[in-house]
Length: 148
Image (cartoon, rainbow, N blue to C red; front, side, top):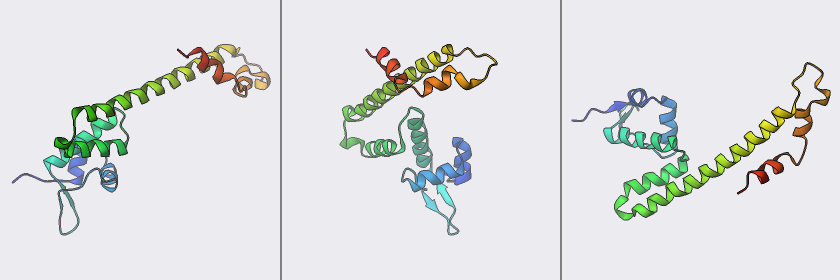
């Protein structure tokens, strides 16, 4: 007979909190193999592998709803194509690229703000950073300079 793991054991093995496992259960991502008469959750090796799938998918940027969809594709993998699964990573890559672009724009704006300020000991009444943050053109200057 395969050893079943209590929720605390699975949490420790997977380096997540018990609360995380309970949350995944409420989200329909994970469910214990069985429960004892007193309500203790017991997880199987399959549950442990499913949790690893969830954690790895999170690390590469998939949201919980996306992970739920990926899990359904995995569960019914004979009913789906690799192309269908690959499309999920393509969409995620485009989302990450858009975030990177946004972060680069933010960094350029911050660099400009930082460089424009004298950084002196005088009052911030006329601080270039504080004044520039009120400028409606601040981000449009940087996003247009960052455009292809």
